Length: 222
Image (cartoon, rainbow, N blue to C red; front, side):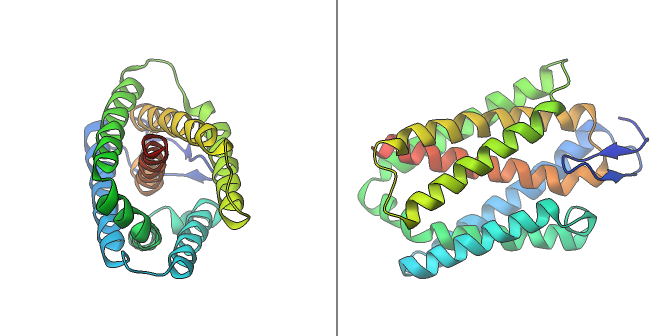
């Protein structure tokens, strides 16, 4: 680890004290685990929400994610940023609640397959990112843009009648790019990560895990 100025994926310079990769990994994954737990809680609480209410929660969560990405250091460092991450995790969970509840009721095997596939993907790509000697940080912004565009297309399809035969293709794209982002995030954590990167790295990994799970849910459910 270095104790010089570092740049997060938003291009904003931050300074921080040096921290070991092991400690940073523990901090990041703790935040990811709590965020996933809150998402699960939100999904359970929101299982009976109407489609409109669930969609509103999803949009609110997406909006909070965009604010965190472009809102400056306040949304990436410190207790406020952690609270922001937890709040958007709950909102995303509320938005997903009705859909996941329906899958669990009518096709629980698909949910189990998607969860297992997600776990294996995250473990595999995370390990690869930690092991690779090549610096993958230049990939971060292009991959993030691809995911953002793909999610935007998905939302547009949801609002305007669905994507038809394009849905599986889009799910494959989101799955592949999100898996690559997991690899890049873990690679960045080992090579460049400082304590100031903890929250935004946790957010990126959390969002990629959610995207991978939803993509597999869509693919296995077809």
